[in-house]
Length: 631
Ligand code: WTA
Image (cartoon, rainbow, N blue to C red; front, side, top):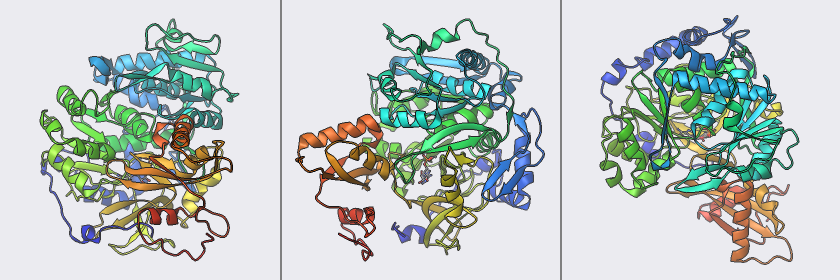
């Protein structure tokens, strides 16, 4: 085990007991009963869930499991947008608000289910007009505006496979993702707005497509006046191609196992993994968890603060909540702009009922002080959630007392890009335990094991694993199935998540952090190898090693050790240049907080850099076994 944890937390069980009305009024009802029902007949459980949705053709079998490959809802046909949009338009939700967006300076845009469907259909027809067909890949690199959601749903409408790239990635990161997916179209905007400032997105795309031979068109949403010029015939205006097309577009018939989207996530090599999700299972998983775990009701307003560029946004801004017929709220505002009360003010104004954010944001709110949330009325909140990294007990307590007013249950949800939906949490009504995400939800069998797959006793750290397939699991890694098999072959017969965890006697699971070379910085997964290869691509750098260091707000920060090539002198200027270089290639989210110039790096005899040793030295800890160390 590489991670330590505070044993007292595991032995001194502390619970908060939510008001029984939560359980009574929830879609799930009693957790234990629901879990037992699932275990008694897993296929029947998932079949019941799937039957709540619309299918063009029903399935022959709920699942087909040929280790390590699963198929769900075999031979069933569907289109996800029929469930997210048409289903509601054809019933009492036709004029219900589907989406509320807030921009800076009080700008607001509202879509009903009907108007969202019309926009989606028009953009779907526009994509067809420029040659996009079922199976083609479309890269979406956009700010957090309704058009980002519309572009995703439009792809889903016609069966195009979207690859959404978070707008905070730099040109090299974007280029790699475009090329790996062989995207035919990139959908972008001229600018993204961040704390009153415009950041140019389109210029990043221009650089990213220089060596991207598959890109035929760049569709640009022009937000600023006067509008930027577009280069004919490659660049096309977002609104213009929507003009004159029909607002009706037949939904493409998709097989349940057809690829739905690709989403890149960091792995242990410099090359991110294109996680592939399939239409049917993903739809069922995100719908089930939105309705039964987030307990979405018709009068809820659901605010997930993620960006649709991450899996959290895919599953709990777009597909899950819309399938459940929710009203979703999104904003381009940041928690600290125009001031540190911006989120609380939005909750008061919009009467948000379900708020889903990340520990890094919660810790930032803690730092800014409770006087900010205390200025606003947060009484509308009935559920508050967290995702992305461990919600440490201090942050849990603050969130529970200051935001939840000692009565609002916290859903600390553990999951991954690969899992598609949340898998572990404390279901509504169950006792909350600070520091612990909770238990596997009905539908999921999880455990903490040693490297041989043997269950470890409560209080002992181990690897978090999932024991059986679930509908929204990844199907493969795009063009690299070997990396897919690794999830199931690392420990024989089970899915290894790559996280370390510890179980309490009560079965509650505490997530300790990653067991591999991925650093979670402010909730974003960053591979040490990605940052190292960005650094090494700078002409002055011979070698680089990157570690994560604990950070009070961001969870971790990045520290890089750099060996310079002969003929280069270390200097502050060079350090700034390296930071600038990483920012431009990978993006601002991957920039090292610290760079230290060194002469040597600790390596094994086979030449592998021992980051563990670097980290231990940095944190003043015992580096452990260094017998294989060369230097
Ligand atoms: C971490 C985000 C502790 C974990 C949905 C996982 C968490 C990685 C939690 C996946 C949580 C996510 N408690 N750790 N509630 N949720 N993680 O792919 O290390 O961006 O493996 O998916 O985030 O990050 P990803």
